[in-house]
Length: 158
Image (cartoon, rainbow, N blue to C red; front, side, top):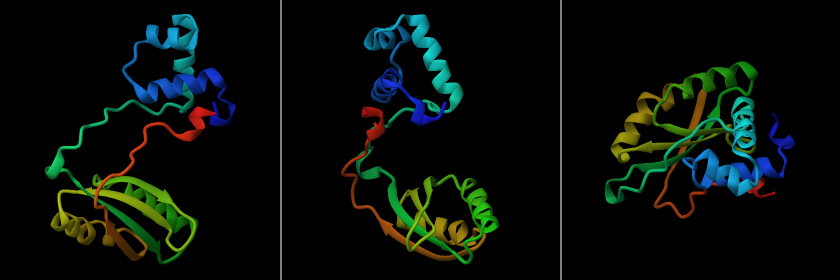
């Protein structure tokens, strides 16, 4: 089911599950005004269609021992389909990469990396990022602190 075809009940279900992924089916059904069986059918359709890709736990910030977040811009030597495919296959194998986006603008990719500290990021940079196929330039910026970390995209509210 393409996200564009979600109706108001689907969006409400997604919004509720983003706030509490462990919500019981009975509570979810009551919150959206459906029977538990109808709610479960809808939920399974959202999962099967890929609208819900999985469930996860949001961990508490461990404070001073927290991971260092580094935002990395990668520019490739060539902007061809083969170059993109090779880079994307490699970046998916890097466990420290939390997010990777193909971008418009000055760089080709924006990556969020989590490292233990600056020395650990240096290792990731030297041993992994700079060795990925087609990398021409790496620009890194260290996050000072998290200001906003959302759980619900705006389109769920529509």
